[in-house]
Amino acid sequence: MFEALDHIGVAVAELDPAIEFYRDVLELPLEHRETVAEQGVEAALLGVGESHVELLAPLGAETPVGKFIEKRGPGIHHAAYRCRDVESALEHCRAAGLRLIDERPRRGIRGSLVAFLHPAATGGVLTELVQPAGDH
Image (cartoon, rainbow, N blue to C red; front, side):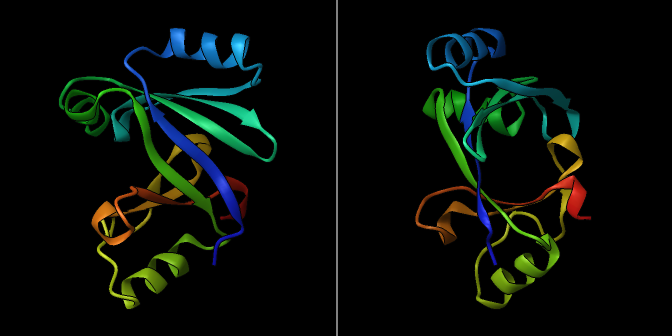
Protein backbone atom coordinates (compact mmCIF):
# COMPACT_ATOMS: atom_id res chain seq x y z
CA MET A 1 0.00 0.00 0.00
CA PHE A 2 2.78 2.46 0.89
CA GLU A 3 5.78 2.99 -1.38
CA ALA A 4 7.97 5.18 0.81
CA LEU A 5 8.10 7.72 3.56
CA ASP A 6 7.09 10.85 1.66
CA HIS A 7 7.84 13.42 4.34
CA ILE A 8 7.82 14.34 7.99
CA GLY A 9 5.69 17.40 8.69
CA VAL A 10 7.14 19.89 11.18
CA ALA A 11 4.97 22.67 12.63
CA VAL A 12 6.86 25.96 12.95
CA ALA A 13 5.81 29.38 14.19
CA GLU A 14 7.57 31.22 11.34
CA LEU A 15 8.62 29.74 8.04
CA ASP A 16 11.66 31.84 7.07
CA PRO A 17 13.75 31.19 10.20
CA ALA A 18 12.89 27.49 10.01
CA ILE A 19 13.93 27.33 6.35
CA GLU A 20 17.20 29.07 7.21
CA PHE A 21 17.94 26.49 9.91
CA TYR A 22 17.15 23.42 7.81
CA ARG A 23 18.82 24.83 4.69
CA ASP A 24 21.86 26.59 6.16
CA VAL A 25 22.65 24.52 9.25
CA LEU A 26 21.39 21.05 8.29
CA GLU A 27 22.21 21.65 4.61
CA LEU A 28 18.91 20.34 3.25
CA PRO A 29 18.08 21.89 -0.11
CA LEU A 30 14.90 23.96 -0.33
CA GLU A 31 12.94 22.30 -3.14
CA HIS A 32 9.54 23.96 -2.98
CA ARG A 33 7.59 26.65 -1.16
CA GLU A 34 3.84 27.20 -1.40
CA THR A 35 0.81 28.54 0.42
CA VAL A 36 -1.81 25.82 0.79
CA ALA A 37 -4.82 27.94 1.73
CA GLU A 38 -7.16 24.92 1.98
CA GLN A 39 -5.02 23.57 4.82
CA GLY A 40 -4.27 26.99 6.34
CA VAL A 41 -0.49 26.80 5.99
CA GLU A 42 2.49 28.18 4.23
CA ALA A 43 4.69 25.18 3.53
CA ALA A 44 8.20 24.43 2.39
CA LEU A 45 9.72 21.13 1.28
CA LEU A 46 13.38 20.46 1.95
CA GLY A 47 14.97 17.40 0.40
CA VAL A 48 16.56 14.60 2.34
CA GLY A 49 17.34 11.58 0.15
CA GLU A 50 14.14 10.61 -1.63
CA SER A 51 12.00 12.09 1.15
CA HIS A 52 11.36 15.55 2.52
CA VAL A 53 10.99 17.59 5.63
CA GLU A 54 7.83 19.65 5.22
CA LEU A 55 7.83 22.83 7.28
CA LEU A 56 4.34 24.11 8.09
CA ALA A 57 3.66 27.63 9.32
CA PRO A 58 0.03 28.44 10.18
CA LEU A 59 -1.80 31.17 8.29
CA GLY A 60 -3.69 31.93 11.50
CA ALA A 61 -4.23 30.81 15.08
CA GLU A 62 -7.50 29.00 14.24
CA THR A 63 -5.99 26.76 11.57
CA PRO A 64 -5.18 23.13 12.43
CA VAL A 65 -1.43 23.85 12.56
CA GLY A 66 -2.05 27.06 14.51
CA LYS A 67 -4.05 25.10 17.10
CA PHE A 68 -1.38 22.40 17.17
CA ILE A 69 1.35 24.96 17.97
CA GLU A 70 -0.83 26.64 20.61
CA LYS A 71 -1.46 23.31 22.34
CA ARG A 72 1.88 21.50 21.87
CA GLY A 73 4.36 24.05 20.58
CA PRO A 74 6.47 23.67 17.44
CA GLY A 75 7.65 20.21 16.49
CA ILE A 76 6.82 17.07 14.57
CA HIS A 77 3.25 17.35 13.33
CA HIS A 78 2.75 14.25 11.15
CA ALA A 79 4.30 11.41 9.17
CA ALA A 80 3.34 11.08 5.51
CA TYR A 81 3.50 7.94 3.39
CA ARG A 82 3.59 7.93 -0.41
CA CYS A 83 1.13 5.66 -2.19
CA ARG A 84 0.18 5.12 -5.82
CA ASP A 85 -3.56 5.40 -5.24
CA VAL A 86 -4.63 7.40 -2.21
CA GLU A 87 -8.30 6.48 -2.69
CA SER A 88 -7.48 2.76 -2.54
CA ALA A 89 -5.22 3.28 0.47
CA LEU A 90 -7.94 5.28 2.19
CA GLU A 91 -10.50 2.55 1.46
CA HIS A 92 -8.11 -0.07 2.84
CA CYS A 93 -7.76 1.94 6.06
CA ARG A 94 -11.54 2.45 6.27
CA ALA A 95 -12.13 -1.31 5.80
CA ALA A 96 -9.58 -2.00 8.55
CA GLY A 97 -11.70 0.11 10.89
CA LEU A 98 -9.27 3.00 11.21
CA ARG A 99 -10.64 6.39 12.21
CA LEU A 100 -10.28 8.81 9.30
CA ILE A 101 -10.00 12.57 9.31
CA ASP A 102 -10.63 12.76 5.56
CA GLU A 103 -13.35 10.63 4.02
CA ARG A 104 -12.09 11.59 0.56
CA PRO A 105 -8.73 12.83 -0.69
CA ARG A 106 -8.10 16.56 -0.99
CA ARG A 107 -5.44 18.69 -2.64
CA GLY A 108 -2.08 19.04 -0.92
CA ILE A 109 1.24 20.68 -1.70
CA ARG A 110 2.49 20.53 -5.30
CA GLY A 111 -0.92 19.34 -6.52
CA SER A 112 -0.75 16.04 -4.66
CA LEU A 113 -3.83 14.21 -3.37
CA VAL A 114 -3.76 13.69 0.40
CA ALA A 115 -5.87 12.22 3.17
CA PHE A 116 -5.25 12.08 6.91
CA LEU A 117 -5.79 9.28 9.41
CA HIS A 118 -6.68 10.24 12.98
CA PRO A 119 -3.84 9.86 15.50
CA ALA A 120 -6.14 7.83 17.76
CA ALA A 121 -6.10 5.12 15.08
CA THR A 122 -2.35 5.18 14.44
CA GLY A 123 -0.65 5.01 17.81
CA GLY A 124 -0.81 8.74 18.47
CA VAL A 125 0.78 9.81 15.16
CA LEU A 126 -1.18 11.99 12.74
CA THR A 127 -0.69 10.08 9.48
CA GLU A 128 -0.99 11.46 5.97
CA LEU A 129 -1.44 9.41 2.80
CA VAL A 130 0.11 11.16 -0.22
CA GLN A 131 -0.37 10.48 -3.91
CA PRO A 132 2.06 12.72 -5.82
CA ALA A 133 0.60 14.91 -8.56
CA GLY A 134 2.23 12.91 -11.34
CA ASP A 135 0.39 9.79 -10.19
CA HIS A 136 -3.17 11.08 -10.73
